Length: 469
Image (cartoon, rainbow, N blue to C red; front, side, top):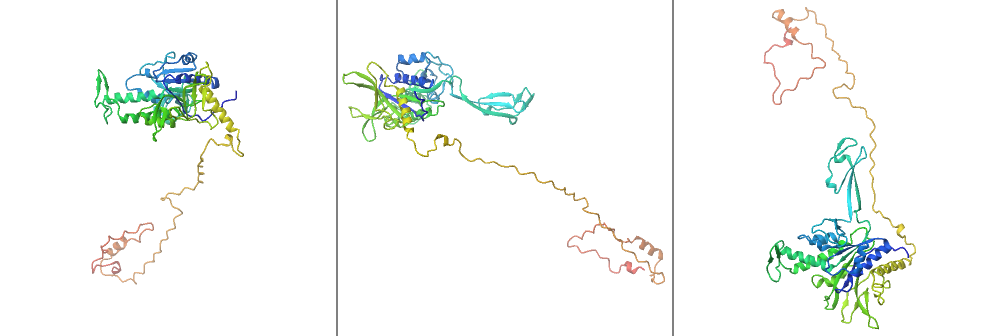
């Protein structure tokens, strides 16, 4: 058998009336996963119907891991269970034989992110944290130092959670019951006064001991429809699957916007019946058909059709127009020999392989398709500036000070030539001795007088040096 291609898978919906064989069909999906990929199936069950013998056989063989999700029954945990389950979470502790858990069991994700702290000096692994927010100063016994966060090397490690190593597919049985849990939650929340708005039809709260029920209104119906779409979208983000998630749902007759009779998924409100098929890439319906001898056969309808009651069944497929037949019909006395999800997915593989055989000249192929996009930029540190001569301090002289030239003093004239004024000669000698020869060369100039104040003048008639001879 050729190696299966890794298709870009999508979610698949299997419709059917009660007892049509929807859950049994999920067993064919588990067999396909093991035979093709050696992977197992996680089966989340909200339906109250029976678990077929074939499914129980696969459970005991370990090809199906079964969880009866309603056993996580603690008060007001219904919507949380739905949200986490459709993201691939699984109970930390579970009875693998019955699928039962404790009422408030912890749910663990399919992948775990751990942050490893390593000492930069010794290289020792100091801690493994669940979140980066838990990073604190950590002691290293090797180098005997308490390191702050900035001195530690933090490495992110994202890996498959313990126990999920063999998981390759998920199935949710069924979407009708899952949206019913949402409506039940809203009923209890309104009875407890947590939400208000429009009252239910009976207009009050029904009390019985500790139980208070408020009923549902039109807003709850719209809320339930939105949650159903969200559950399908959540499942498309589950990592490490080899085939897309599978949902089952009860089929329901309704009318579309044009008034035509349609058959689609049974969800809160009739409007969702027309819309739900758009949430999936493949929509199939399991039922029965009769041969010419009047014998019934399990039949898996793959493409839209109009039945004898003139109702249009809202089915679809992601295959090419010729990739899948309209229906797969079991052979007599061989249930699920043709009406089989494994056969459907193998046909989808063959359809893609045939499409790839039609080559396009010059196509680059996956080898020529880049995996990294965007430009990278780098900044080069500037070169260190050349060494500069230190600037001398301002107090240091830039050069040798100029020589001070003292002006020559003319010799005094002879005594006979100098007229002598009246007065004692001693006073004259004292006055000439007290007069300075002149200001020193490095003396600072006298500050100017304050503005607005005239320079001091000697009084009129006062004698000057020129008058003293």
